Image 1 (cartoon, rainbow, N blue to C red):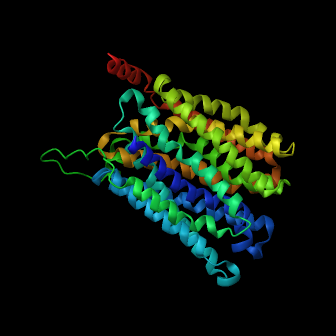
Image 2 (cartoon, rainbow, N blue to C red):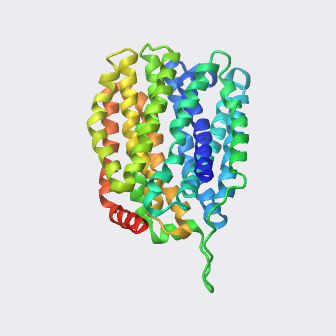
Length: 411
């Protein structure tokens, strides 16, 4: 259980830091770092800095995945935690454009890239830490613990901003140093599976070269299969935060609804992960993609009805569909790759999906909404779901192997 808690605490802290930026990009950064651009242009510029982290995420998965495959998950996870915490605290201490001028947004972009490196390296190590010591028939449930990090972090980030925004937007970022200290204490001394030895006479190639040589198909299809989950999640957690305030809702109402939606989000993640142990990894994700195609065109018409209830319904359904797909991902992606390069393979695939699904939609959404209304954003989200569905159908399902392993364990 300590390993599961360590994986959950780490991803919670990493994604708390990541989501703080998304919330601040929607509510604060246009005025602090891009005041000369005005409202709409400042928001686009702010979300552009938000998106640059996704460019760094695949590089982070390569760097820290190499460490994880060669030396084990623990040193990689400690390094990602420290990197994220220092970068986030530095953002909280960074003077705005009124003090530093054009240097302020440039430094902000550099720090955001460092955040991307850290979160890109965190996920694969955390899920492997949780799943590799679990029996085959319960790895879906074991993988739920690191997958609960994002909903816990989203709720924590919203509650922190709700409580501290009127005092200073910087305090939630500086609080990251305290959370990192807690995470390091939890992760220190945990037992991790040993790194498999290299057979005698063989030369160990880099994990990245190994995975690209042996399993390029799994990297590409596994990554693109994450397009919809990332698009739904970062649209829900970042873009809709600003959309709700621009639609006339008070910021405290938007943040409070976000914190409540995180509870629903976490519950669906847990249920979907447990379901994947019985039905196979793909089935919940495929169901989520079909629901996403149906829901995406309705999302903004529902929110545009106006009021807190409509916004809560739009955000809640969006995050629930994401959670249905996200729950099994922590066990599904690692199972696609061989042990010697599993951390790198799963991490690169996961973060490839984050670039396509997580960086592009929040960046493109403001321009689409301004030109064609929210229905165009819904159409873009539906397209991401179709991409994910096609890739999932081209990948294998592990349901028979999981059921066989579970029956063997019972016998």
